[in-house]
Image 1 (cartoon, helix red, strand yellow):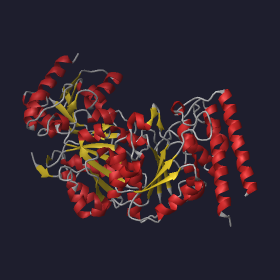
Image 2 (cartoon, rainbow over the protein chains, first blue to last red; image 1 turned 45 degrees about the horizontal axis):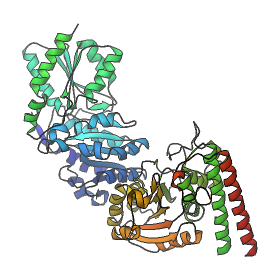
Image 3 (cartoon, rainbow over the protein chains, first blue to last red; image 1 turned 180 degrees about the vertical axis):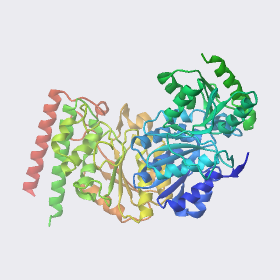
Image 4 (cartoon, helix red, strand yellow; image 1 turned 180 degrees about the horizontal axis):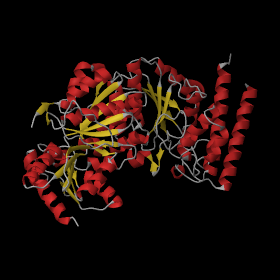
Length: 310
Length: 287
């Protein structure tokens, strides 16, 4: 799979050119959050507030209420947990702030449990006015960022530092909130994936194809708003759904999909994700095995879903 | 041209009107944060009627000074000052705290013009003010950001993150007022969780600090002037106040942080405030 280097940081610096009103805030993590690129080009529009995430998010609210578009970056755990109350005021006043949660859940493998935001999507998804995005590759990362800066309002986006895979075609891709993207057609089972689970889900679909099982793959970068039509199309046309997310199975993508499906047309939904636990240190692939988020776990979940079909 | 004596008298009179509104609102609304509203009357009145550049008919006027009610529970004092200044009809004060009202008990940006931000979760106002002051600096906008905080609110840790950041960024267009009424919900601030010595603490964080009698409008005006003439640092005016100021049975009583006013208490408060007004008129005639 092709990879590109630092899509988030590079896109942010480029978007700084197009959006003279863009201000970037950081809490002593500019190399991790790749905001260093933006800072180099636009030092006047970059503020490092030190290790003070709550202060950072409230400062972002003030800037936004003065007409700025603000990108506010830190680890996913701190954005959603430490600054949760500040983010609540942000959401309440509909401030044009984009909170970026870096190194979510297992991605923060080298740092262990306290640094792994395993329930950030649940927190942010339940917050009124807040949009929630978890892009699955470099193309979606850039697409979500471009979209967020063109559309006012509070948003939370997950991001991964460093190398990122390229799955979707960068030339034809355009992200829109509330729109899922069908990556592969299929009619036996549908895999609805977000974030770092997208490449794993793609590998799972390949493996199932070798067994003669036709798995549809849908990228769900927009978790809120959710593309309910695409979810229901998956339910109707395949008859069973597997969700895959780098997050606790409580409150994230799997919950969002199950809520819609159970209300509108119940079919089996099997959730791949972290089973209500904190993480630990280790390489991402090792953790994916340990917590049930690997390609083989997605394949197994698809088999379960297929067996549960009426 | 108004003389200084007339100006002070006018502001004192305005303060009494705001005090009457506060008692009225909390009596009719069957509860509200009365103690901390009454202690902040002179600060808020002086800011709204004398200091801040505002256009009540054009609340979103881009060059307006900003006011952030960081101690977001003392809405009665803010609503009275806003209504009396012409931001919305005075009659609407009667809807305070009632279902469907724009006058929510904790200030809500969605309901009213000229409310800069929703508050009520304490400790965030200074940080939000920093964001506004940074935006003004980027835009070359020469306005002031006024923030009302309190001694009790200083117990929130985020206050000190903001204290650090405002002086680090040298935001000398921030003028914060600290309503030091010495009481909080559960008792005396010094007993619940001491925040003193406030002057030394704020100075050591890099702020220009003044201490005034928070019920003396002339001292408040002078403090703002001094702040505006002291460049390079954010400003804190520590206002020594009496919680519940102006109503004898509320003064200095922490139980009156948030309270319902009974019919009898309402009558007593009105009589006391009317007497205060007669005293003020007498003072003016003597002068």
